[in-house]
Amino acid sequence: MNKTIKPTIKPHNPNFSSGPCSKRPGYDLSALDISTLGRSHRSTPGKAALALVCSETATVLGLPEGYRVGVVPGSDTGAMEMAMWSLLGERPVDVCAWESFGDGWLSDISKQLKLENITPLTADYGNLPDLTQTNPDHDILFTWNGTTSGVKVTNGDWIDEQRKGLTICDATSAVFAMALPWEKLDVVTFSWQKVLGGEGAHGMLILSPRAVERLESYTPSWPLPKIFRLTKNGALIEGIFSGATINTPSMLCVADYLDALAWVKTSGGVEALIAKSLANLAVIETFVDRHDWIDFLAEDAATRSNTSVCLTLDLKAEQIKAMTTLLEQEGVAYDIGAYRDAPAGLRIWCGATVEEQDLQALLPWLEWAYQSV
Image (cartoon, rainbow, N blue to C red; front, side, top):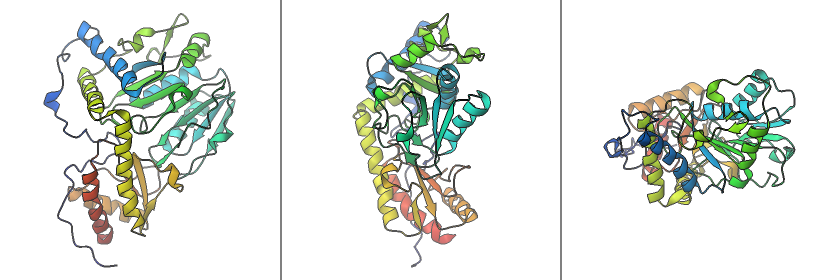
């Protein structure tokens, strides 16, 4: 192997973290509408801003008629826990898990909720379980994109349109970056700090009419803390989905998210963001094809994530750590080490807030750092 000369061109933006993700191109904190700061979130402008979060999310994503969108506490984790605690237990549940977060949902369902009628469908990092083995009479819970494994669900063809159970989808690193079959998804959760590069602590909960029907007809046998309650006296708390949040949100984060949604619209909508993310992935694919010391953790090319791109290297774990440390010291790439529970490797965010030219500038540095360690 010829020794690579140390590159001189660095990425303009070295932020390749998989969450919180890089802010959008051209982001300017001073451009945010901060008129709600210092005001109550229950004030007229506060509630209007939160209601706009819900309505603009539905518009930008093109959600079907009747789908509810709400802002909830606790990021994507809070939204998923709220959905599981409020909806599960009415019928058996199939839990699909192939990476850290799916494993976490499976653990919570079995060890905390202690449900008995659970069918786990699992796979090792780099693979998907056979999703066609799910039962449409059961509730089905899964992540769309494995943030820590770099493996994504390719489509919703395996979901039965005539299903009796609910589909509950953790889509935090997929929504706005992958085409989601909304009519087949009854519960979808995500967080602002992922694909749109928003700020943390807040989750988004999307419910189909079928999910609302479940909430209004089924009462779990376990107690629900106030922060999880989506119904009152057997009816959906509609305020949650029109700007009256359960707890106090950060109005600065709300302004930041509205700025991100406006950027989606001016960038050409969700389809344009998907195309940009796929183009970013293609940059990594070309590099991997040309080097035999690096490969994708995803074993099937069709399932490669176009957001959280996970890579393996023919190095020991401590060498990979040295490599990421070196890149950070050079100011070339921040936060690109694999997730702590995942196999040792790299994880490079390729969502639409990342510019293709920054990825192009990063790759020679990867080769230099590899040879250096």
